[in-house]
Length: 219
Picture 1 (cartoon, rainbow, N blue to C red):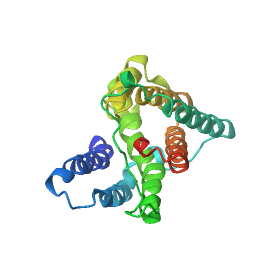
Picture 2: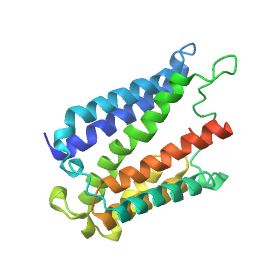
Picture 3: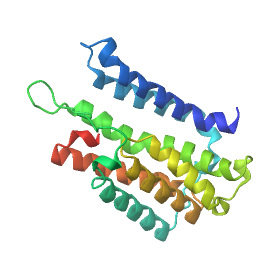
């Protein structure tokens, strides 16, 4: 399989199911669209597992203690900025109601919560970092991207990949900051696990923030 395809298929599957989530309320108003997320997370996780032998950049951990702290710090920094970057001009569109896991009586559906956290903190960081950083950011620098040392990625490739990553999110400015942070981390550590970990910290921390504050629009 093409290395580009291997890193793009899980992402394309995720985006396709995300689009389905967007149109289902109009196509089937009685259907609880929230159940699509566990299906989406599960299918993407399955695709990553099937294709795992293609991901040589994730075969070994290799992060030093310093790189580990840097990754966690970047994840926390992006989280703090993310929850404060929601002014009107910082958004592509209204955030909307978000993913509200409460039932009709106001109680928490912990199955939905569990799948949401697992998908956001465990599946999405691997899927997105493989696509945005390992593939696209390197490919923009050199089409034979597997042969490129991440430390040799230039500013142009970092900016383009980060801008496209930003446009994937309603909070475009927060997405741009995250893309730049994760992209720089990849270049600095030369290890894809660093942005994966930072991304996981951001998404996991965001889940904790949403659950404690009830600000479902961030989900």
